[in-house]
Image (cartoon, rainbow, N blue to C red; front, side):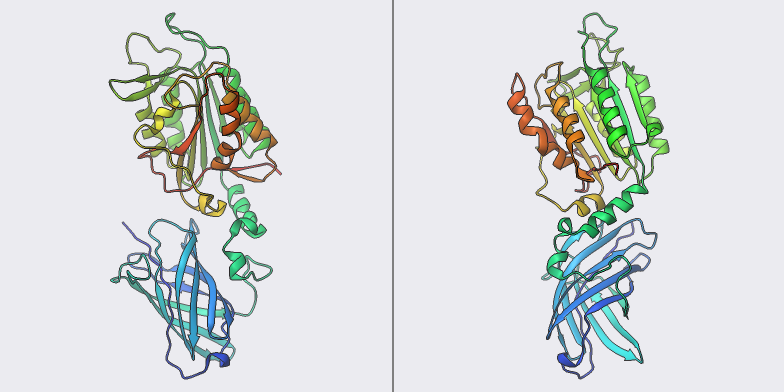
Length: 409
C-alpha cells in the first residue's frame, strides 16, 4: 500500500540576519514522499521579525484529495525552522513532521529547498521517513485566493467564504445518488401493513430533488420492494457509482431485532414471519455500504430497532469538525429514528427531518448538523420518547468525514 507522508521544519546554511530576509508570501513546488509520486504543494508564510507562521497545503497529483496543516517556526539567517502544529483537513497516510530548508536566490527567482523528516517527539511521522522539498516563491497571490489571509484566520475554515466556495465547486463536479425504500404492504398476513413508509420515501425524494443537487435520474424510489429488488438496486449502485460521488440510502418500513442472534433486520414486502430467508440483515446493509465505493455514504432509517446498525459500539458524535475536513475524509454515517425500541408508524422523525432539510438556508449542510437540528424536536414530540441516533457505521470504511448536502442555488 502506498503511504503518503509529509513533514515540516526548516534549516539552511547562509549567514544572514532574519531581518535581511523576508519569506512572507506564497511558495509553490513539490514534496517527495516514500513509495509515492511527489505531492504538489503550496506554502504560505507570514514572517514577523524572526517568527514565522502559516500553513501548507498538499495535493495528490491526480487532484483527487489534499491535506492542509498549520505551521509555526522561526527564521535565523537563511535557516527557516518550523513544524506543523495541526491538520485542518487531511487524507489517509498524511502525518505531521519537521522541515529543514535552505534559502537561495538567483536574480528574481527565490528558492527554498531541503527535506522533511519524522520525529516522534514533535509529530506523527516515524523518524525513519523523510523526503526532499523544492519550492519557488510566487510574486502573485495563490490562484485559489484573491486576498492573503492571516494564519489566525486560516485556522477557522468555516469562517472563510473561500473554503465554502472551494467545497461547493468540488461538490458541483460530483454526483449525488439516492436510493429510497418505502415498505408498507406485506404479503404475509401475519405482518401488519403500515400506512406511511411509501409516502415518507416519496417526500424525501421530493425534498432532495427540489432543494438539493440530486438529479432526478439519480434518485431511485422503491415502493413495496422485495428482498431481491433491494439487493439488485444495491448491486447496480456498486457498479455505477464512483469514489468521487455521494450516496444517500433511506429505508422506512418494519424492522426487527433478533435478541438471540444480536442482529437487526429490514423486512421487505415478501418477508415471512416464520423464517428469515427474505429478511435483510443489518450486516448485509453494512457490507454493501462498505463495498459501494463512494466518497460519502449516509444511511437514514425510519424503522423499529433501527439503532441496531450501531449495536457493535456506542454512537459517537463529531465535535464541530470543520466542514472542509468532513468533506475531505471519507464517511459511512447513519441517522436512525431510534435506538433498540419500536417507533410509531406516523413518523415524527420523518416530519422534522424533511422540514429541516426544507428550512435549511445554508448552501452546505453536514449530516451531523442536520441531525442536531431536529434531534430534540423528535424526543420532545414523540409519543414513546424515541431518541434518534447519529454516528459512524462500524466496520464500513468510515474515516471520520461526513456526508455534505449541497443546496441548489
